[in-house]
Length: 64
Image (cartoon, rainbow, N blue to C red):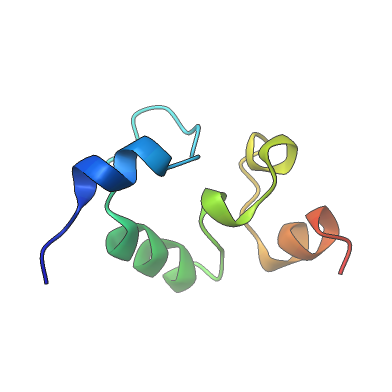
């Protein structure tokens, strides 16, 4: 499978400066899931900027 980093980077909503996984969705997802987190693209913009990627923050952001 070919990585579409250039295309993904245009749509990536992560605001974390210097992220080495920006646009490499498979690496990003694997990294966050290993830490029991979700990537920033799963959060609404206001919540994403807090950099709390926990499942709890996700549920709170979406009021689940």
